[in-house]
Length: 196
Image (cartoon, rainbow, N blue to C red; front, side):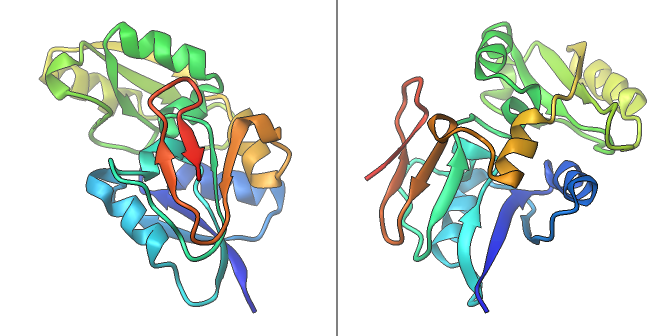
């Protein structure tokens, strides 16, 4: 029997797992240590044998610089990465990125994940969980920011985009879906992703 696989990184897995439990949704989780360096794209190109569709909630972060064509349908939300997904708004992510918030932490993480040149990072964003019962990560985030000489910004995680993606209720305009064998690539504009 073919099934959907949720392809995610360790960064987002605790949120995905807990939200799936709250929503009562069964899912096969396929977790990679990182999506960087094309690891996510390589995994999507070679899914498990029983995979009928890949759902990749971290959006453009799944892709490397080259297009990827999966042998099964591949569906991504139009977001930069897991941090943008959990902010609930692409415009908010772009604004914070422009202000030097390139490092992000989720509860339970001991070190930041940096999206962009680490030398350009001036502030660490901690996505604070108030809904899923994840461990408090503020002390670890404060220590990480202090070690790097960064400011710390506390932001409440907004799970609406992730929930909509997991339940299939996210509007089509906020998704990109590639058919089996159809290349999916970064668009380098506001749409973020393009299939075809």
